[in-house]
Length: 488
Ligand SMILES: NCCCC(=O)N[C@@H](Cc1c[nH]cn1)C(=O)O
Ligand SMILES: [Zn+2]
Ligand SMILES: [Zn+2]
Image 1: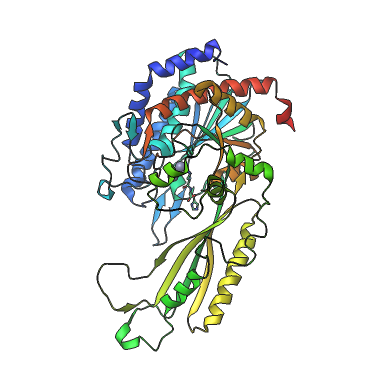
Image 2: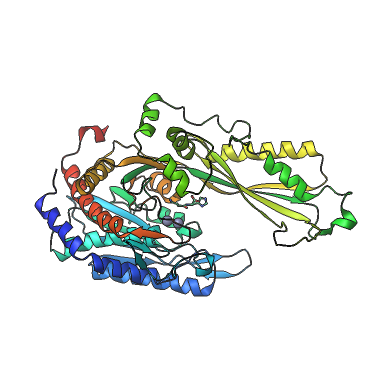
């Protein structure tokens, strides 16, 4: 059905002011708010980014607090200040629903020399595509939310919901110190919040919108094999040593087979059983496998059907081997035997896998493989990160509102998708703050988050702003007269 008249006015305003929205994104992308490289220049840029955003929210009439997050201790003994987290609120009408938006304004590193076709910190429009670091992850979606609110303010229309913002600057570095803040604020800033919206992932299609109801978790492991702290000459010692790298390669090689099946005993025991109803949800997803394969530049995936691909990205665990610290990885033929190496791998977790159980299973398995090698080296296994999977009930109010908003703006139902990666804050909202979360992605599947030539389409950015505006309307309506199914 068409949008009600007041919402139609908001849409027109968003369309008319779209160049200003793009200009704002340009100004934000120009700030090099890289949280991954721990150097003073980027930290200063991060602080500037948070100050610019806080100022914009203040000018919108929000009550804004920039919360001091202390400092980050780095492994080399250095300490760097953590950018403040913005907690902002607009409206406190007790009769309205309160919706809290989470976003982050830090970005992944970007260097033109890595293969960017344009300056990553200069938003550049080519054929309706806005290229720049952070354009889709996550500056564009944060601005879309702010611009949606600002359209109501500019038109002097009453905001249908109370709005809160939590905006951080350390997401790409693992949301440093955020969990402590959530604990501290759960009965204060978050106490009146009814729903949380996160827009920090992508559609699965280039043109069809999506709503996300699940993300995988992640258990990230390191396995160190050490003979001594110094390297060896392979002519002098080769043949008489248990070589750490040979042990490590055998350990890493024992984790997963060539079909992608994880070989750690018991790892699949707790994976939620597959139902017939669930298979139908994968069938309904609009995914062109050939296009997906071609655009990913992969000759052949491990699985041949759309359903199998989606299930192995979303509802089954996967194990990836990431790298080896201490290995010789330069060009040339250096005849070294590394004395100490650290392998890194992670397991993406799905409902109902348990992080501490996975830690035990992996450690037991590696100890078992290592002991069979009868090596004189020392092996140490550690789980560096344990992030839980997250799944939501798609019948709850915030999903109904998101679906209706998308239907109003795009005239189509969204794909109901999950994400194979991890957004740790979603689980924190569920477990620590006990809030209901919905993920409403704005970007298209080919936006290239974390990659060279990251972009957001102008169309996604502007129509996404309208989706957020329509979402406020739908939330307000459902708050007044809830759908019976959402109360179950
Ligand atoms: N589409 C959203 C991507 C968010 C993201 O990349 N999250 C990281 C978080 C993480 C997990 N383990 C270590 N960091 C991810 O790799 O999934
Ligand atoms: Zn992100
Ligand atoms: Zn990211």
